[in-house]
Length: 285
Image 1 (cartoon, one colour):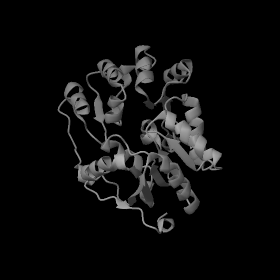
Image 2: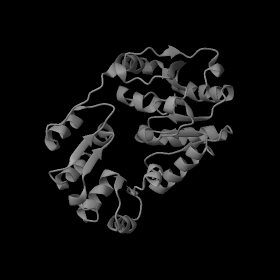
Image 3: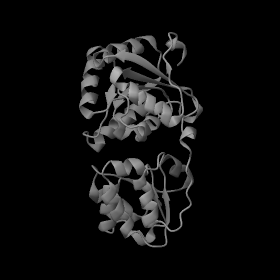
Image 4: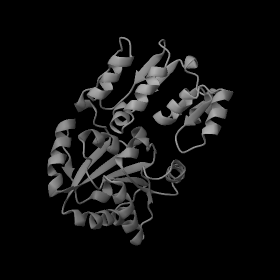
């Protein structure tokens, strides 16, 4: 919408958890670009509020994440409704077999641009790890960091929704101001939290991988992997939240004894060396 305001382009966000009737009204009045989630986009196509014969280009962004989150059937249903003569773009930071299968089934002689893994690591982001030995020591380590560092804004990643709520409660009980968002929250609540975070009224956001790719905030200078991701591919999406648009960023990974193998796998996957966090951590951010 921000770009559309200056280009004279009408853009509509078509997502679940919002009014179906309002979506229908706006789409029928005419828009140039629809940005949406698979379920709601398919629903609008099925209702013919979004006319497939008027679509000139279809873009599937974050294809690997969409397919891994159980949207495969909905995405396939959408492709079945698209006209034969349409430009299709499939974008993904990683390209698993499921995403390549889409290109074979629904695209005509597609041009593939595949980036080597060792070119994926984000320049300008300093990456470190902290040995915490035991899971129970992570909270103290986190609080120590926030007492040491002067941070503009930061994102903390954990691996479960329940842990988002647990860590949020623990941080607030120690007088740290934090926000939290995860997939169990309704869309309206998540939108409010993200607006507060983007505006800077909230400076620490605790979240899960589900929302890792939707956080695009220029002021984020620090990402903390309180839990290492369960898949190396998600590491890129997490640490990419810091150092946006050429700014300096830092990623700090909490590593227990059980996490050492995953840290090794991440370094091998991206062909990088993640150094131990130095004593002068305050000078890094």
